[in-house]
Length: 393
Image 1 (cartoon, rainbow, N blue to C red):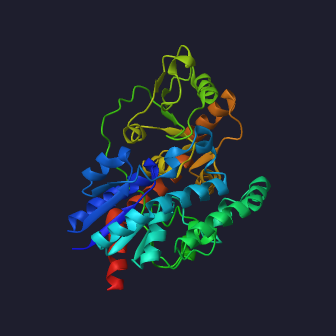
Image 2 (cartoon, helix red, strand yellow):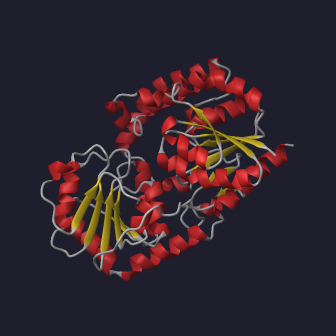
Image 3 (spheres, rainbow, N blue to C red):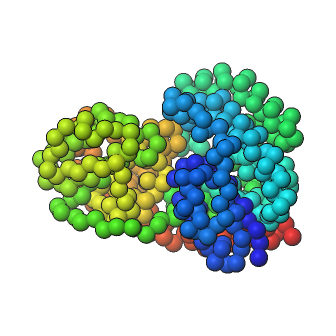
């Protein structure tokens, strides 16, 4: 029996794909210790892992609301948060690694403290990637705008100051790219299929493209019309009341059944009187809805997009970040969805009609879904992790 330590960030889209891998590893007799956050304790323990809380050490949990919105686009802020969290966890985690004596560390690609601790202590390391894997070829799918490039260049002084803090604490990190970039020398589990991953053939063999991990539905959704449209902007930056109003206006009078999930930042009463074909919820069982859906209007986060495509649902896409833009670009390349250029009610309605009336969108989404189901899943991910620590013995 091996001891395997997982590290993850406080995000459902990064945690959920790992849970079936934890179940598979514990079913094989391994001990799994999982460093995460209190909101995720129950689901992690249900998967069979021992839970260790990072709540007292994570700098992201102490950000203001304004900083939380900027963190995905501000390299200096993101680096500061990563370094603050790594240094806060440094002492306790290094001591606990002496006690656990892990055979392997599996860390989310954004939980750089796991990668840093593995490197510092010489423990075999597997990267867990819930987005696309990126190298020089695949990164072309999400080029940065001139504004983003200028922002990165002007922030490098502050970024390098943060890297120096790590170096002074004994971490052998040369620059920010070494900290946050993909390392093609490291075994990596990627939760998508070779078909959906851009330029999959350019990655080494120890990159395991295992497909998304899709949980079973927890409820049933009754389909009450010939077409069911699902609308969700995800669980993070979803305070988008004007967009929701435009969506409601777009689908009024269509005869479609429309399920709109708005999160917990929107006062549903401000949406006014709803058309009879529209239901609005703070949250839904997304898997249960997508099993019945005919179209999915989405922010195109990797987790949501993968769940929609897994069930062969064509996507209407409104990405909010460069990462989501990359997912949208790949979906368009494969003919499984279209990106909205405007968010007027007319444009939203036209986009939904296009993906539901042209059968090629559903056919192409179905092909991607089939590639997900044949990619190997949790068993292939567990095989990759086992190979990593077996090779180190």
